[in-house]
Amino acid sequence: METRDQRTMSEAQCAEHVDALSEDDTAGERGSTTDRENTAAEASAEQELTLEVLQEQLATQGRKAEEYFDQLQRLQADFQNYRRRMTQERLEAASRGKEDILRGLLPVLNNFRLALQHVDQDANAVRQGVQMIWQQFEGFLRDQKVEPIPTVGQVFDPAYHEVLSTVPATAETPANTIVTEVKAGYRINGRLLAPAQVIVARAEEPTASETPATSEPSGVAFSGS
Image (cartoon, rainbow, N blue to C red; front, side, top):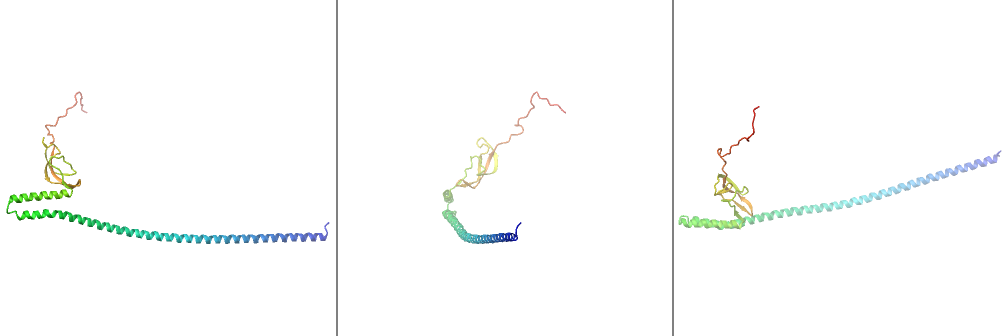
């Protein structure tokens, strides 16, 4: 049997063991709390660092956006200036072209005036003067790359000719051949400027007497219903 002293020692040892376990648990809890605090602090520091990085990146992107916007505004202004300059140059070129054409017509106009001044003096001289003016005007058109559209004796071409009427075709004027030019047509650099109005020969349609009669095939009988 255990003595009283032995029981007392055993109880004391148990108490010491319990106290040791409690201290270990407390130390463990303190260690866990410290670890959590350290982890939280690290997470907070990382979060602050990430926020600073994001703010810096956002500021960088904002500066780039402003630079791109400024470049876009400058490009738009340059393009508007270019369009205005091109429009002005086209207007000036068109004006110069008109001046050149009118300058070329002035001699023709002067010759017409001279012809009218002598219309009562010599009809033959006036006729010759008008003919010279016509030739002069044709030369002006050639200088402008304008040429008359061929008509009489040519095959009708709807791209350049406009039919006013038709006449029966003959041996000399086959069908679809231009017989008469009513109004001259012109083209410039191969493009239509004004169509020629013409009269065209047409093929005669066969009369009823000239139409061959149709006959039923031999050996075929038709029976009524």
